[in-house]
Length: 253
Length: 253
DNA sequence: TGGGATTTGTTCGTATGTATT
DNA sequence: GAATACATACGAACAAATCCC
Image (cartoon, each protein chain N blue to C red):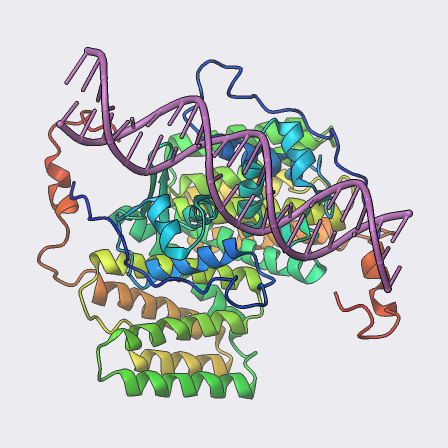
C-alpha cells in the first residue's frame, strides 16, 4: 500500500483569531473544520493520506483539541476515516462506496429537480443561466476552475429549494464525489456538459417535473460514465491487486 | 420563551470503560455521542432543553472535552443546537424545518423502495413479515414499544439496500422526525399503519418499483397527517405567538 | 522479541465571554 | 450601567496505546 508522505506544510495557515483583534464570533473549531474540508476537496490533502493531529494543528495554529473535533465531523461526512488509537486518514472510498455515494446523490438531486420544477423565480432562472455562461467560458481551460463551477451549479440548485437539509445532503454527497473522482476519475474529465445544464434549466422553467428529474438523473449518470468508467490505465494499485490477495484470511484488515 | 429546567440527573450513567477491564476499542467519545443521541431520541432529554457540558459530563462520568465533541456531531445531525459562546440545547425544530425533514425523508425512503423492488431475497421478505407481525402484536398497547417498532421497520428496509450512505441518511432523518413528533405530534399516534407496511412488502416482492415508491410516499405522508396535522390543542406557545411578534426586527435572533 | 520514540485519548486549568443583580 | 457569578473556548500536560527499529 503506497504510504503517502507526511502532509507537513501542504496547506496555508488559517487566519488566526488572535491576530485580528476582533475574535470572530464563529468558534475556531468551525474554521478548522472548513479549512480541512476544503483542503481535502481540493486535494491538497490526498485520499488515504495520514492526518497527524499534531502537525495539522501546528500548521493551522491551533491545538490538537480543535483538530480532533474537526476530524470527528469530517468522519461523519465520510471525508475522513477515523480508526481508534490509530488516528485519522483522508478517506479512501472503495469502488463499492463510490457506487453508493453516486446512487444517493442521483436520488437527492432528482428530488431537487422535482422540487424546483415550476417554482423557479425569474431571478433564480437568470442566476442559473448566468452561471452556465460562466461554465461555458471556463470550458476551454481544463483547469480546476471548470470543475469547481460544474459543482457549484448543483449546489446552487439545492440552495434554491430552500430546504436546508436537502442542501446539506447534496453538499455532502457532492464533496464525497470529489474525493471519489480524485481516486478513480480520469485527470481532466470536464465533469458536466454545459448543454445538459441548459436543458435542465429549460425543463425546470417549463415546470415539467418528470422531465427535469429524468434529465438530472441522466446527467449525473453521464458524469459518472464519462469520468469513472473511462479507461484509466493505472486505476489504482489496490483494486488491481485485490483479486490476487495472498490467501484469504491472512490480511485481516 | 419558556426555559426548561436543567437536565440534572435525567439519564442513566453510561457503562464506564474503566469498570470493564477490557477498555473498549471504541473511544469513549463515541459512547458519549451514542448515549446522548439515544437520550434525545427517547426524550429523556426534551426538545429545547439546555445541555450544560459540566453536568452532562458529570452524569456520564467523562470530562467536558468529550461532551463537547459529542455535541459537535449531534449538531451536524440536527439533534442539538450549538450557539457560539452560549452552549448547547436539544434542538427545537421549527415547523418549517419539520417540513423540510419530512420532505427529505420521503424522498430518501422512496429511493429505498425503488432500490429494493424485486431484489428482496426470500429471507429478507420473511424477516420483514416477522417484523410486521411484531408490530401487530404491539399495536394494542400504545406504549413507546409500538412507536419504536414502526421506526425500526423503516430502518430495516434501508439496511437491506446495502447502501451505507442511504442507511445513514434515513437514520438521521428518522431521528429528527422523532424529535419533531415529540414537539408537534399528538401523544400516542400509532405512527405507522400495519396494513400499509404489508402492502409495501407485497409491492417490493412483486418487483413493482413504481408502486412501491408510491406506497412508501403515501405511507409517510399519512404518518405526517395522522400525527402532525391532528388537532393538538396546545400546539406550542412559540408557534401560537409567532404571528404576534411585537414588531419585526426587534427580535433579531 | 523488546524497548524507545511517537501519536493518540483524556483530563483539567485558565482565559474569555455571557447572563444576572 | 458596572460588578459578580457562571458557563464556555481553548490549550497544556499526563497516561495509554501503537509504531518502528
